[in-house]
Image (cartoon, rainbow, N blue to C red; front, side, top):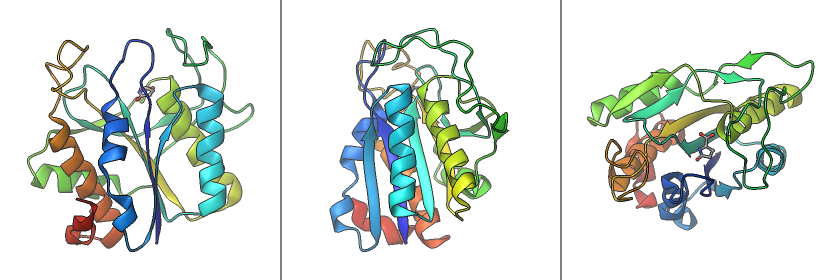
Length: 211
Ligand code: PCA
């Protein structure tokens, strides 16, 4: 069993990225199956290259990517990745990209292949705010989600991949979206519950050692 889980470093306008904090809090060393947890650069090309490289190298069963969307109030399970880079802020390499396809002559969109209804259900059962989202934006998060799904498709892998946007953490006082966000601990619990679903069906206890 191999599962890749990713987050992102901070980027312009977001000084604290809870997705990075979550990756650092997952105790992957103690994991009995191959568990690859990594913080990606918040820059279009390097992030896309890295997620594709991780997938090619590990050929995992699952890829769960996380990123913050300051202003959202619930764990947001993304339903689509769009073939577009279109940002109004630069990425961390200073690139301000508008209206460019991620991959020329490739599908306009991909749907996630993770069992998103199961992920929704496990979060709902834990009373953690959860919602579906039909738009992952057109910045680096969408880029990574699209790049992962396209790579898996191109390689003909059975890997299931998807993306969850998370709110800002309430502890990040003064940061955009923090007041409407969720405590980091709640989001960590949510991510572990999702990993539990992927690792062992309904058996969430299998990832208890991530604590
Ligand atoms: N959120 C940004 C990129 C990195 C992150 O955590 C996004 O929503 O695209």
